[in-house]
Length: 522
Image 1: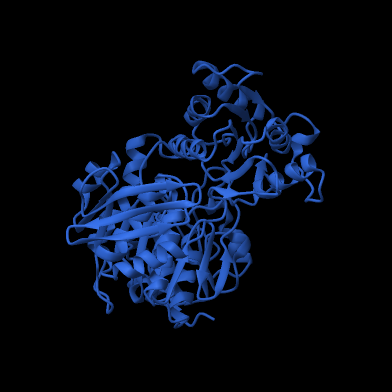
Image 2: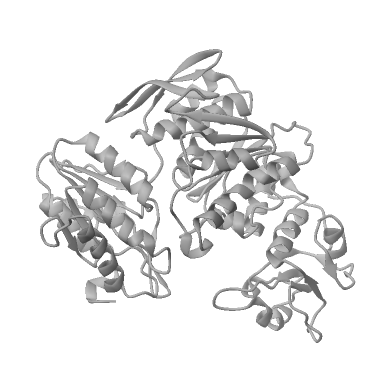
């Protein structure tokens, strides 16, 4: 149960750096919400402009549901309740949420992890290290939030939670007596100011590669969104637990020079390829995990991990650097924590029903991640690599060709299928992907296929697999739904792959989940 002090709206605004036009009333506040449908009596409604609807049009609805006041960015003269105008609604939402819960981040050591690929894995590695060091820690990732012994689902298709939920999670951690939290900070979460008020002590980046350009508009803007985490470190106030204030940067990634140039706090570099503050030597990649020496100028520590793939050496190095040099934790705790993480749901997760070939589910949904996953898959088998994946609708269109190009160059066989087409026509998405495959030597019907229904695509891959081959289904990983039109259909690649395997093996297994593509084109 979260305990917090009652506040008036004026007290909240007095506590945050948000300018407001108009006199702020001294009315009690029972909560903060940006969804008029979720308003409870005494809540403050934050009217946000959106892509499909403008929150300002729902102020009347919020008033009817009992909202005590509304906050927005447009001048409104005849609002049915007290209305306050601010310059940035999302900034106000984040800071008001933090103030409502008495700024819980100020009583926690907050480690933020951002990047294109590897964020969730790196978050979990750091979290396990904190536990191994005997610290009371929590984690908020795109998979779930863990508060003490309680695991909370953060929902379908989420990035960083919205500010009211995020601050509520942090407040629950404080109430539970936790001292540290690892927070996955996505580019959307950073750009939309969801993490304002989180007062990060440590920032960690995995890599910055092509992703989300549909939203950010350019790679420079995407990179700048990630940079907000590192710019914020210098403004974190003093905390009773101290202020590590450090940026953990990947010296092997092209983002290094940019982030190194804008970071105003202590910098810690990690590398697989060169001497840095922490670097790897004697790397051994096996099908059951990896091993390397984590080297510091003063010595080295042997690291063993159940994670697979060379890219996970970088994720382990990032976690090791954050723990030992960022938080001054013992190298032994870093080694123990890394060893304790057996895997992350939907990340290179093996599905074994006794078949004579390997089947894996992975979250790889960017060109870089797909390339790394296929490189790892190649190391796992002397047979053929069969890749199954799609590309999401209403998202970065350039990825469609790029993903297909990566696959025809790195996999032996490619099956292109659905991945959250949303309101776009799936056949048009697949046509763009097929064009990318053909541009790099793919031959439709011989080296790649278009199979719109994802269940049928997995069946096709399973049925064409020979002993010693490897199937890898990418793009969905841990996610529990797929979006067609405006509707989310229950979907789990792991369940679907088990269904396809059990059918081929003629053994009991789950039913193939239903998608509307089963009935025809969508």
